[in-house]
Image (cartoon, rainbow, N blue to C red):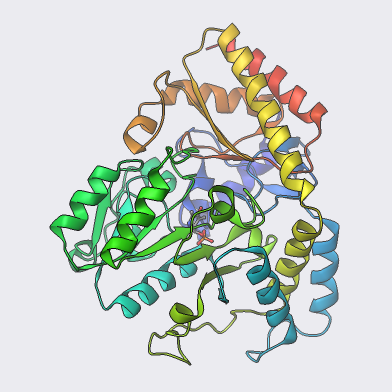
Amino acid sequence: MLYQRSSQLFAEAEKVIPGGVNSPVRAFKAVGGTPIFVKSAKGAYLLDEDGNQLIDYINSWGPMILGHAFQPVVDAVIEKAKSGTSFGMPTELETQIAALAVKMVPNIDKIRFVNSGTEACMSAIRLARGYTKRDKIIKFAGCYHGHSDSFLIQAGSGAITFGSPNSPGVTTGTAKDTLLANYNDLENVSALIEANKDEIAAIIVEPVAGNMGCIPPNKGFLEGLRRLCTDNGILLIFDEVMTGFRLAAGGVQELFNIKADIVCFGKVIGGGLPVGAFAARNEIMNYLAPLGPVYQAGTLSGNPLAMAAGLAMLQALDSDREIYKRLEEKTAYLAAGIDKVLKANKVDFTINRAGSMISVHFAETPVFDFQTAAKGDNETFKKFFHGLLKEGIYIAPSAYETWFITDALTYEDLDFTIQAIDKVSRTF
Ligand SMILES: *Cc1c(COP(=O)(O)O)cnc(C)c1O
């Protein structure tokens, strides 16, 4: 495949955009080569500026769970745009999507819409701090909660890929209020709580981690966090920006039947437009302005275009719960196929999977936290990535990313992918 036009476009972009991209992982730094410029996408496929067609396993990093240019979302956005794209005033649409989200997700009474997952997580911890009147939070190494200051401490994929787990520009004052724990390690969390008695406002966690590859919680981990939070007056925040409306209609809370105190959303909830949201029971949400003292706002929050896209997406997911079964089956099929060919080709690897999230780590030891995820062989990953690209398959350009399976993928696409992986892994 040729990437002539992509290379030209990247060179032009680099002159006026730092690194040529508006979000770092897009730049291919971890794998080398030039980023591919997209012209259009439909269903499971991307069409790039050189006319190459690629099977897409990133899907805008998660939102396109039903495939690209999903017709009901496209129609809703076009129709809405005709009657104005933003008013900074309430619209009925906001109540409709809020009511549907509250119906689909367990344990929430109210939801506030923002413009990104970053904003959702940032606002959720401010709310937790205001509500508990405590300053510190616990986050897990390798978990990503967006790029706001408090979270850029061992922050998973993007930050790891660029060798700056702790970003310059985050003040020591802010960093000292973020305590770091190891994923799947309850004793570690317990010790942190002991050492910071009555100072911790919240524990924020990706309940199925997806930003150090896919790492499901060990049995008892989330239950343990719930118990520690309840016992110590700490709020449990599930960052479901990636997992929300993806692993189940009600997210991980539904999947594992565990109650979080605050839940953050993004990605799927916007159907591909910039949307984030955070939600909780009344008692907590009523702490937000204008009802309560914790301030949070947004000029474009809840704008009709974004809400129309999100509503069309949630309606599609709500009206056909079989989608989750199909996604599970397709992803299990893909995982089994990859497992078979990598074993046959004597590759050291571990496949992690939860529902429609999957990742392949080139390490033979189990991957259950950031340290074990970091053991993967990046040289093998680079060969894997570029080999697949040559075959017309686009996975995330970093070994720390999850693949997102969409309902638009057919079993032929999956077979084609498994065959390509067979071919590529023979050359390792
Ligand atoms: C993507 C992501 C975010 C950040 O969302 P943005 O919309 O990129 O700001 C936060 N948390 C998790 C778990 C994510 O996967």
